Amino acid sequence: QVQLVQSGAEVKKPGASVKVSCKASGYTFTTYDINWVRQATGQGLEWMGWMSPNSGNTGYAQKFQGRVTLTRDTSISTAYMELTSLNSEDTGVYYCSREGDGYKYWGQGTLVTVSS
Amino acid sequence: SYDLTQPLSLSVALGQTATINCGGDDIESKNVHWYQKKPGQAPVLVIYRDYNRPSGIPERFSGSNSENTATLTISRVQVEDEADYYCQVWDRSSSVVFGGGTKLAVL
Image (cartoon, rainbow over all chains, first blue to last red; front, side, top):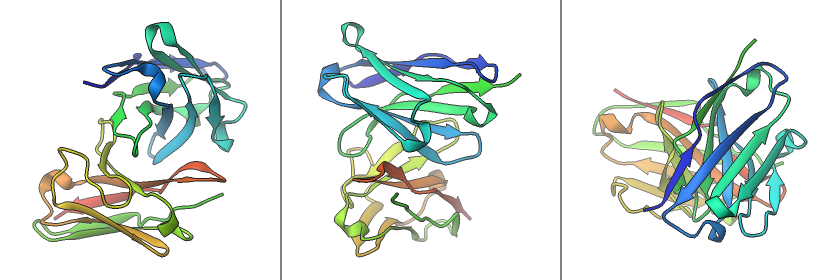
């Protein structure tokens, strides 16, 4: 069965960076794009970007351009999302999801708390 | 950029029908997906490509898309349907876009 398992919760200080991992299993990792979606505290779902695990190609939402980097390690079927220059508005839950007809498969979410 | 507009909230009596709209310019030309989001849980895809139900989603969930409005309909609403619902499309200029979300309360 398809599974996406994300890394654990993080607490960061303002100005720091965070890197969240998303390990895929149950399918061929390079076949489907991985997208990242976040839900900041009290806000709605917000798309951050996509990455092709096959080619490494990426695309980012304009809001996060210059602050987010999506990468992968195909040898361990894992995708990564790094967000820099964190501020309090970045506090929330970050999800990876697998591309398809809509996003049927999601990671469990990673809570990132930005606090001094 | 492409925008999707949803009502902030909707209240429906138990057993009645909930209708959640998602407005967007010429949205009928796009594939619309709908997600259910409960606190502390990952989103769940309930409708894909306008009206298709993934396996495991009750038949009470249905979707449509016409002109400038896509609609998620939940018939015979149950207590467990209380959640936030989001529409989503892919747009050439904005890539992936989510609506602002609709909070469904079951009375």
